[in-house]
Every structure is written in structure tokens, then in C-alpha cells.
Length: 271
Image 1: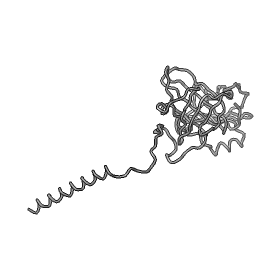
Image 2 (image 1 turned 90 degrees about the vertical axis):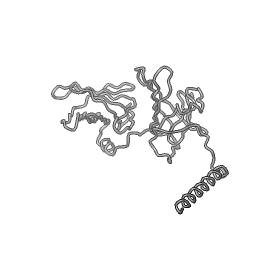
Image 3 (image 1 turned 180 degrees about the vertical axis):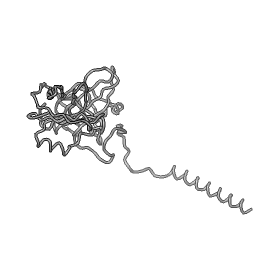
Image 4 (image 1 turned 135 degrees about the vertical axis):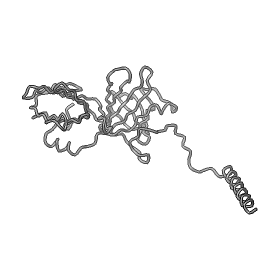
């Protein structure tokens, strides 16, 4: 009998709690917090935490944009200072090289205007650490498509304390790559120092005049033993493939029949 009464009390109490909660949810006052109506949702590839907001443009931004005739257009924009930009667009699946555009930018009424030859080519707005393309080549992008036109902030190659030391010592270019880890240093007045790997002896070669074009610097040097080393520095964005940092330059080194690919930093402006 006691067990029956106990179960009856439990059932009555449970029914009462259920009724109270259901009525409360229906009659509870609405929150006085503002409703967020922004259709842009930033959900991935962000490098900073959600409580941090960018207020201006700096470093690298990158994203994949829709493309009618290819798998997608990878757009990467670098802001070297507070008024200029360098943009690269690579059409995936077409086997073409990246198209490079340089220009200027300024902020106007909460949006960022991009100019090429004093003509506005696109407009962006900055949301947290993401750059939203709202007008692309003079075509407005509706809010319903804005998630397809997002460029996310990316890690920029960090200032390395050793680079300042190398610069003070007269080194003009440093480059490195992985698999295996290798590095190169170039002093335009003295030498090329190439380290094929941690287990191999460094190669030091007297410098010769490079071949310089608008977008590249090519060094061709010969060791005392007759081996040719060719280092090509190219003005195109580069991902080191290890730390996910982006660099402004790509470098390749041919030596003893092997090709080494990596990224580079100019310690003294040359291109």
C-alpha cells in the first residue's frame, strides 16, 4: 500500500511540473534582446576567435568564389599597407596560372572600395575577420548569395627575429620549404647559401648577377665542383604547406637534378 501511495505522489508531482513548464513557455515574456537579421553567417576558416573584430584591412584574406566555367575561383588579397592591395585569382580546374591585379583601396561609409586605374572594381564590407564581397566588378551581390563571396582572414608569414638579423648582415632573400626541410639565403653582393636538408652539407656559392623581370628574379650559379644551382623567385602568393602561413613570394631551386619548392621573403625590396 505504501509503495502504491508513493508512486501515486510521484505521478501527481510529475504531471504538475509538466503542466507548469508547458504553460510557462507559452506565456513567458519575449527577450528584449535585439533580433539579428544579418544574413551573412561566418562559420569556417576563420583564424581569430569570435570575440575579436578587425577594423581595417591588413595581411591576407582568401576564399573560394563561384565560377560558371570552372570548379571555383580562389581569390587571395594581400594588403601591404593602408592604401594598396595585391589580388590573385586562380580558376580551379582550368590549368591556368593565377591572374594578378594591383590597385588601391579606401574606406567610405562603412564599406571598402577597391580601385584599379582610379576606377572602382569592387566593394567589400568587413564582418569580424571576414571580408564580404558586396559588389564584384560593378555587379551587386544580393544577401542571399553573400556566403558564397566571403574571404577569410589568413595567417601571414610571421616576423621572424632571425630575418632581422640576416637583414642586418646583408642578406636580401630568405626562402624555405618542406619535405625535406630546406632553406636558402641570398646576399646580392656576396653569396648564395643553400641547405638541401638538415643532414646534408650546406652549399655556399659566389653570387652572380641575376636575371630580373617584372615578376621574377632568377639566379644561376655554379659550384666549384661544376654543379649548377638555379634559384627562381616569383612574385606570386605562396602557402608554406606546414604552418598554413601565406607569403608574398614563391621560390624554386634546381640542384643536382632535384627541384625544391618553397616560399620566400624579401628582406630588402627588389621586385
